[in-house]
Length: 334
Image (cartoon, rainbow, N blue to C red; front, side):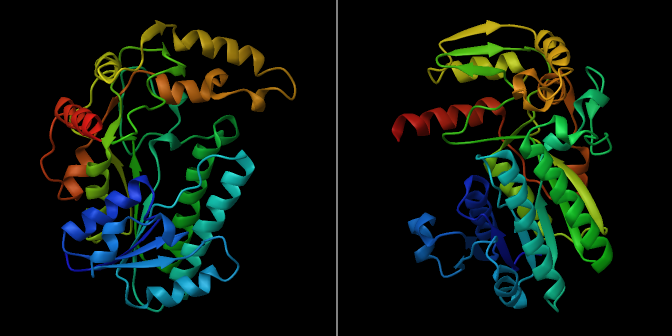
């Protein structure tokens, strides 16, 4: 179903830029929603199939402006994300942006398909056993207040979009990418804790749920082009997923980390559990000392892509080593 018009929020962001490229590569027109035109790649101005739409989704009149722009749009990829800053602000602004998108869909008379970029972080790591195969049917986090703001925001987005999709009856894809990596973004929190040139490695076993940003973008566009069975959830991981030791070894080829210090994540989890019982301290602990976060990030499990391939037309992917080699060459020539 190529040849659609797809509106992509957060289009100038890390995933958004690749989603724009993937959509154009598949023969779709793109409405690239950005907060500021100053952040748009120069190449977009030479592509008549990309229309830049500057809009802050938190503005008071954003819903009305977006609803008007959706009149000839077939699908939305909602990739905009608020990362960093105070946790309360992250959650509040993420919820507001989601409300704007959903409100605009409700106000629009045409049928739309929504692809929500959620995250692997929404799963409850404490509810799965070591070595288990994590699928879309695994339980979600039931105590989000014990997790970071990003997890809380993604859970909130999923609840918001599900409620409106059920009421309105539009197609909804909830896509849960793993650790998205690419140029200038090779680090991920499933590897341990960085301290200058040192990596505190908390686990060497278990797959790293990698999702190369190009592959992630292709999956999002495939979902935008594919009718869903109402509300569908898909985990987005690469087919070739290294274990932690292999990923760290590949990372060291880039010059970082200079040294690796192994300390079991279970030790931090025990210490965090004790500290978490101290009144008014538990929810202030850093992620390194939050047992719920450590289980979600560090517990050695396996990841499943059965539903990804069954529902979407995913092209053959290069291996992890091939992608890392390509990224290293690009980094040296940059």
